[in-house]
Every structure is written in structure tokens, then in C-alpha cells.
Length: 161
Ligand code: SME
Image: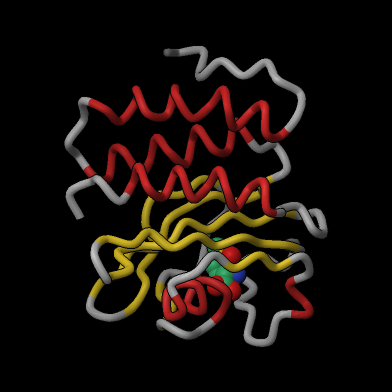
């Protein structure tokens, strides 16, 4: 465990395929929400060297509040409907932004960020959190990420929110 997770594949899909079962077993027997979210951010950061920031915003009192993350200091509160995170939460859909400068209302927590993907975590009819990944590269995220991160979101949806 001290060495981290084992990732040998060179393609993105291959790395996700290796990471997901390890992520599943990390969280399988642990009931603590924060511990599990924290480990997910570590697994995804290891899986995706292109990501500059990986983290959760958790729905609290009708807004999104910063949760466990890996990366630079980030904005703490985001209203539903604002920025990429708030849009994904309000519209309950994954939002892929290849160039953040082209996304009206993008919230620049880190001026170096160039692209982003946000995946909502839905329990019943409620968005309990969003999973946000940023990159210093343009167009770092695509449908491959959306498909695999949806699986991660489905695992997280089973946690005790
Ligand atoms: N860029 C996000 C804000 C969160 S940071 O990227 C960590 C947004 O527009 O919602």
C-alpha cells in the first residue's frame, strides 16, 4: 500500500481499467465518507498524470462546498448553476470543457487550468457532490474519461452521504 496503486498500462483507458478494481477494493470495507473520497482523489491523480487537480465538491445547504482533493488550494464554495461544477450539479450531467476560456462563467481557481471535466454524483434525484478534474493541458478530457469517471461516481453514490 505504501507504494501506491499498481498502474502499468500506457493508454488512458488501460490505466482506468487497472485503477478501478483497486479503487473498488480500497473503499469496499470502509464506511467513512471522507476517507473514501480522499482515497479516490489519490487513485485518480495517480491514474491521470495529465490532471493538475482532482477533487470533490459536496452539496451542503444548497451549494457546493470543497471536499477532499489533490492539487492546489481551490475555491471553497460554488453555487449551483455557477461555473463548470455548478452547471454539472444543476443540470445533473457530466460537463467536459476542452478550453475553459470558452466556457462562460468558468471559475478560475488556478489560472494555469486550461481544461476540465465535472461528473455529478447522483443519489436518488439529488446531486450529493461533483467530481472535478482540471488540467494544465487543453482538451485533456474526453468521452473515455466521462465513461470511466461515471463508474467512479456510481461507486461513490453508494457511500453514506
Ligand atoms: N473551475 C471550476 C471551479 C473549481 S476548480 O476548478 C477546482 C468551475 O468552474 O466550476
